[in-house]
Image (cartoon, rainbow, N blue to C red):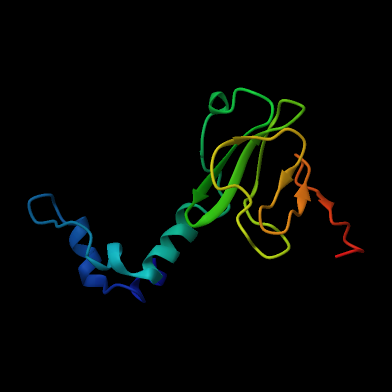
Length: 132
């Protein structure tokens, strides 16, 4: 808890714990501070499972959706073995977002910037790393 006090004064946070007739909502810093946002993400979401969708939203093999998870671009897809996979939505070449909208992937996931290609398991196919 002391980590939060380096961002927001303790007395501002203690008001939240008062009996209902004397308490107030969270201080403004909880909604405006970048440091608070980073701490909240770390404490609530890092190293924990986070639900980002349901399997029925990807009913067919090759269905893929881009998703933003707290500023982290990811891809959710149903692979050729009918399994749901999740990857970073970033090309390893130049960091470009690979998917911009929901789509159907037939064979490869292709970056629109320089056509680097990945299989549905997230492995780089083209260009071969020795050629890159």
